[in-house]
Length: 317
Image (cartoon, rainbow, N blue to C red):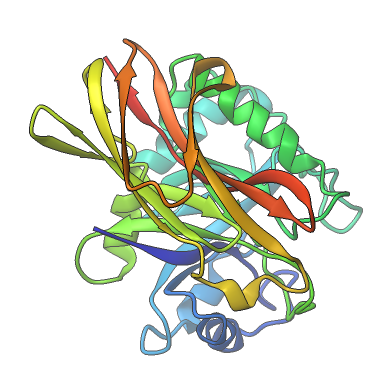
């Protein structure tokens, strides 16, 4: 299985972006991405102009409401977003899932703006098992972007409640941007050809990693079985095998000085159960029943210590 760099949150002139669908795809190729999702606000119209000969893509939409923004990818039929309100969102999400789509919470702690209001997530979801992922990192990385810390904590709290939710990064790409800024990507774990079907299967399977650039993932070996990110295994002894390439997408780090230093395994309550050097290939861990385990690649950005890549979890029974 290979983890490929993708951008799952993009806009064009069909909503509030400056790109045409074609120039968005060309920009993605220039940024050495392998796949994009077009998620214009409340419209699919731009998806009809996408060209798979330029770069593979997922047809999507960003439901843009006063109560939050929701990323809907790959739905085979139209689900009406216009009457979505806090207390019927579970029904709406179920309808998206029944249409074959995936559901992601976009930037849950965004302040919003007069032009693009309602960015903060205020929907009353009770069936989180029907949500595929949460955008835990959003836009450029800088000291003033505190929404990411809150989104990461929110995602962790849902994992602690027993929900199986993946994590995504959203550049929220509207137009060509400052090359000195640091943007990340979402890595999707895929087998076979890079296309919409396999990308959606990766999202549905929870094989998602957020990163400022480094390619980072793991598999788990237990009782001669290999488990991928997003899968469920038994409690007990297990071997984590890491894949870490700090040089991947290195030229897209802007003017930031990034140093990758260590791998951490994190579980329930945001507890770190293991810390090891970034070059570690594998490590044995005793897994507890009913827990989740994700890997985090830590280092520094201009001297500030922080996570630089975070995988979605594996789960135990």
